[in-house]
Image 1: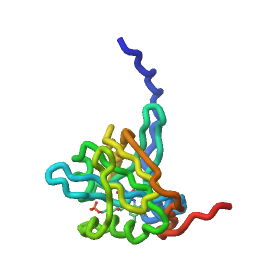
Image 2 (image 1 turned 120 degrees about the vertical axis):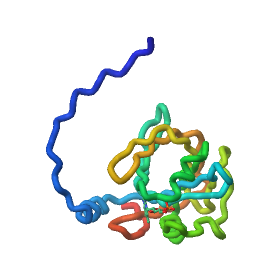
Image 3 (image 1 turned 120 degrees about the horizontal axis):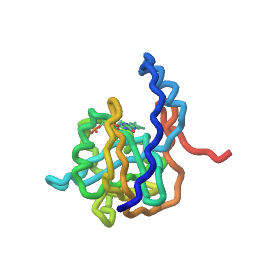
Image 4 (image 1 turned 60 degrees about the horizontal axis):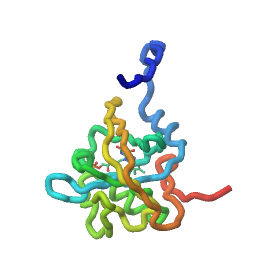
Length: 177
Ligand SMILES: Cc1cc2nc3c(=O)[nH]c(=O)nc-3n(C[C@H](O)[C@H](O)[C@H](O)COP(=O)(O)O)c2cc1C
């Protein structure tokens, strides 16, 4: 029999507190992030699909896991999750327009965008400062989003360069202090 992790003690219960969504967005938006484009070839017809994401985080080294959160309204996520492998492209500071395009629902996101397939077939966008090839490990419903836990299969950093930065709803660039 395989050993099982001990059960976590029960969490304290607390009544729901009313929180204004706009205020939460404004305050949480002070937490500065990079931007990734999550891309894949849709399983049904190999069409490249993707979306801009800043809720990305590295989770575990052993096993290698990352996570990000996807809005339930995303029209691109069903296509991305249909693929056996997808790519997390870490965007560079020169890819602001690409980020805007990948954040626009219904846009022809890949038109004129050069990319090459990762070993598992996920689109690696030219100019990305790193890519991580993943598969979906687990999806956890979380309010109006889904937390996606993804297993890492391959990765590379094809070029040096500074990251695209996102702070209070605006793009910026990284500066070392
Ligand atoms: C900088 C930036 C970060 C974003 N991060 C996320 C995110 O973490 N999760 C998410 O669901 N949407 C995020 N979005 C919005 C999605 O990119 C956008 O809603 C999505 O591309 C809509 O297109 P779709 O319907 O084709 O999925 C972000 C947008 C921008 C500009």
